[in-house]
Length: 157
Image (cartoon, rainbow, N blue to C red; front, side, top):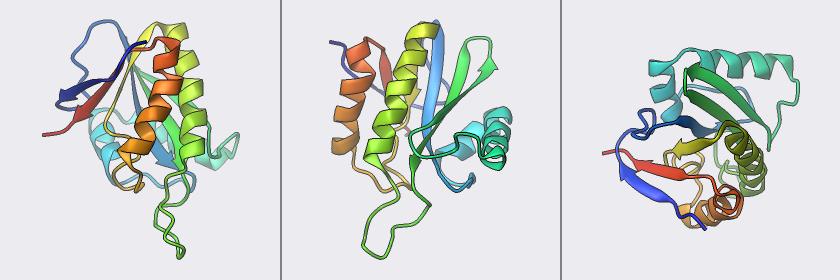
């Protein structure tokens, strides 16, 4: 089985050849404006615009769904709805929803196989969503890596 390849650098600038999908976690309330999405929006306008349209349309816009947007000849962005709202609730539950992240990554792995693409990401779900990498990593292993998809995780310096 493949293993996650950890790199220092910017996940919006993948350093490998071939088709690439850059993935990240979005919330289920249509909010876009903090964290990694800012780096995406600085580089490409389409992912944010498509996400906002998707939210407005309400079509399949819920936890566990993904949206894939082609931004360059061999680069796609995957918006994954894996976060409920944007703040930790009164019971101390962070916005991250691991079961939704797993559904998203299962769908993403099918797309990556179809496109023969590697997948690139920051440590998804571990910033504003409040998740823990030790919970996310095994989900990546049982979805993307099980399907033989190459995964690169970037730690921004």
